[in-house]
Image 1: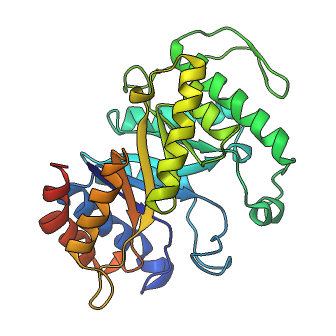
Image 2: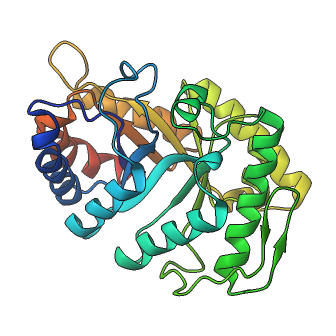
Amino acid sequence: MKIGLQIPSFTWPGGPAQMGANLAQIAHVADDAGFYSLWLMDHFFQIRGVGPHENDMLEGYTALGYLAALTKRVKLGTLVTGVIYRYPGLLVKIATTLDVLSNGRTYLGIGAAWNEQEAKGLGVPFPPLGVRFELLEEALQIAKQMWSGNNGPYRGKHNQLAETLCSPLPLSRPHPPIMIGGGGEKKTLRMVAQYADACNIFGPPETVRDKFAILKQHCDALGRDYATIEKTTLGTVDLQPGKMSAKDVIAHCEALAAIGVQHAIFNMPNVHDIRPLEIFGREIIPVVAGI
């Protein structure tokens, strides 16, 4: 099993003046500790469940560019970009730039978007959910076309591109893996089966297991090999005395692996303390690598 790190919060000691240095230290330690991937949220405001919306939030792709220059091995991506936040051709160009400058270490994480507050707050159109799913499907089609080297036009219901030029093409082959976030059973998982290289589902193991079963049904209906989709999850680990131990995390990873998870991504409320990352590097990652 591979282990990823998500950083969803930047409200750390020292405030904005120390934010760059703190983020750099986290990235260096994670890279050296053997984390397979490093993820940022793609939000403009902090989200519920993590903190008040006024809390610090960095723009995702700018911050990933910073991390690309600081790391050597770890894969980089947003978990995940709301499709409404950027025109799809521009999003593909941004992700391609990150892939080229990171020497082929990029995921394209994408989803239908849900945070109406931040969209309205910064003046980003927030259409109804059905339209957002249409926009998501068109964005996936545009990404596939741009990364294929086909420079022809794209004509969709919502997007019209006269020339889908992507130069340079990404270094990842055949292209950066596309990860679709979410577990919607009718539309999201169907799009995973049709377009994606990876899914990301959160929840207890039994929920994840059930979503995987539905994903397999979509794969069977579309003629897609279910085994070619990377199964990832997102969860929280709190490695502090009286809360969780390395053994607890390993046991959780074993439970996830038993239902087919290949890549477990975790966030940590005290990640800026660095010690949790060091525990992962010493005691967890070497063990779960063999699961």
